[in-house]
Length: 365
Ligand code: KG4
Ligand code: ZN
Image (cartoon, rainbow, N blue to C red; front, side, top):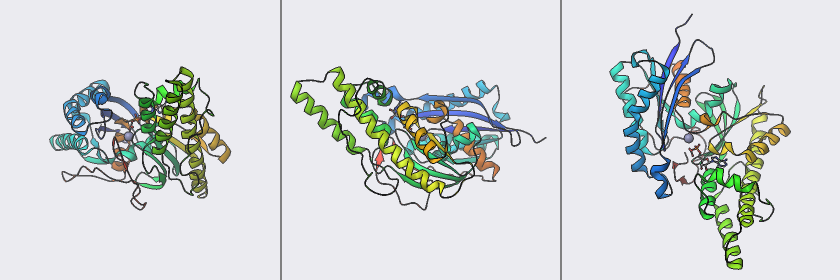
């Protein structure tokens, strides 16, 4: 029997400091022995977005602690770790550097291999960690920082079919909440309000549906919402509870329609490759939205593809996904050394044209 491989993963590319320990014996399903995440929401809340300098400092302060906690939760010592995987991009550079430097120190001090991981690959490979899905599968990453369709062909081989050219949907939910005086993060609060609203009360734009392809745009939606809000306020002097619910429901309906139609198109491209077990996986905080999930499930059923979404804790930023992506690279023989650099931008599909725009959480990659 081969010795199990135990890998420590580190993540600090945005506003979560995370460490995780993953173990795999042979080709068995990998086991998450520990996954620790320190969020920074309160630190950035007064500024209405992630402040890179504050994020980097908080990562530097919390990384050692999260490694210690992960080891203690896994009941292991550093000497029992076989390799270190670290997010080396894309993301806010000060944050990425924090974990890269920490990982280099551990690798040099313990004399164990170091593997740099693309953060987006971490998200995109999560369905293999949670459900052992086989390549090729279609992935929709949809969060506060990312929005793109990828066909995953292999651990380091992705084809991007399209993505947002401006805001990510999570940003649009957050901005909508801000415009309507709802608490952050905006996604859950807007979803909750929307449940009592009429999705047809306002006809908000469905951007880029008139153009071919899978690119998306969400920044115009908030302008439309702002205009509708101001029109109601100037007519009635304020918003009623029903007005707010209608605005949320109509906004959410627009996001759902755009994601559904673009997913249908992405599935068409993917299914043309005749995958033996066609599957769409979603990841990212916005994948928690029940209206979005339900519509995507319907689109998949109509296209003859299965649908999966990893548990929420593994959909949002975490280090277990980085340890897993590192494990896949490690097993394929990849190794990095002290020359590993932190990269602010690092598209998964190097052949696809660069997307425009950079969100509040850093480059869209
Ligand atoms: O993946 P995530 O935790 O962080 C990154 O952006 O990387 O995603 C957070 C985003 C926030 O913008 C939040 O408003 C959104 O996911 N979100 C939701 C829901 N829950 C979280 N958006 C829509 N509906 C939800 N239920
Ligand atoms: Zn992420």
